[in-house]
Length: 205
Length: 205
DNA sequence: GTCTATACAGGGATAGAC
DNA sequence: GTCTATCCCTGTATAGAC
Image 1 (cartoon, chains in turn brown, orange, yellow, blue):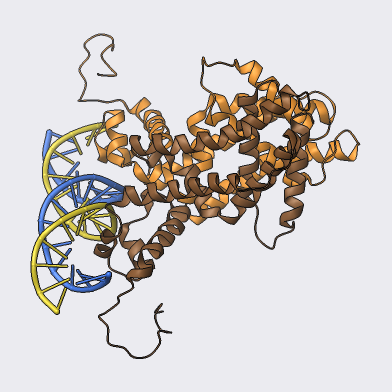
Image 2: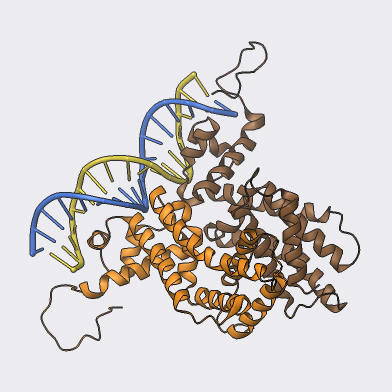
């Protein structure tokens, strides 16, 4: 299995000069392996093997294993915040809540590995990195909490405690990733619809 | 720090003969460390140090590290099933659903470490052990799904997909462990009540 | 029942050749 | 830019003394 077997022509080159794509491939391999086996259980040698390079070569792209994990998590959460910012949301708390629920499910089903890591590997972050990631997560939670607070203030929703409801709803929505399988019994759209109905009812709307 | 400093009298004894309690203490230390740092990140030496014995002594109580993890998870899930079986449940699907929601929160808040491990360390189980644990988890999920199916059949609840709703509700309820802190802003009873209201509404009751 | 000592494999990370 | 080779540490698990 050689990623360059379809390389054009027979130009002279040193053994493996993939610099343009090796970085992303390392990140992809790490993402996959961390999600499957856990950060602590995956060795740098395994990651290198998956990419098709030697272990030492990894250190051209990351200073150490911890930074590799941190970059994956930060990248995921930054993507999440940016995608939500770009999402069309409609008018009013109810429309925004539906947009959030559907967006959250769609985004998370598209990136099961990154989601898994972002929720499971927090304890393997060094304190400084942990604080940084937590701030990003908090920013995302605040997006939902603002919707719930607006909804409660305008009388459209009944939410006795917006902070608790925020965490409860995110836990419920994120949970979809633990069981949903592509091509399974339920279509994505049907899953989105059912979850949205449960969310809507849960906040008394 | 010597666990036996309050030992009565001055009876002759070899250096450390704690056999009656060392087994449980090993399990407790492993539970705590696995929950805090993750199974793969914790060494047998660390566990031994926490108990106050040498690493080699652990192997008098467990054949290996994997079995230690498996026993912790199996013990937790067996306790869960047994406790639910012994729980007073009232009459009818609605009363049973409330009993389940409150029981689930209470049980899980009482054992944060065990809950964390049972949900996070599944991927570190060898296939045979994994299957065994999954069967226990499935049995617990079936308890809730039966309630939802009865509730839907009797027209008391509106649940378009009982399997999906089961997983969504359990995810939501279990999520309480990720943020609840003893002595925090909300009492346990208030948390139980708020979650129960969300569950009740989510199933359209 | 616990200790010390150790076997042996594998970990993260670095140096220097090409 | 990647390779090979290696350093040094830590991991699990076992053997044999006490």
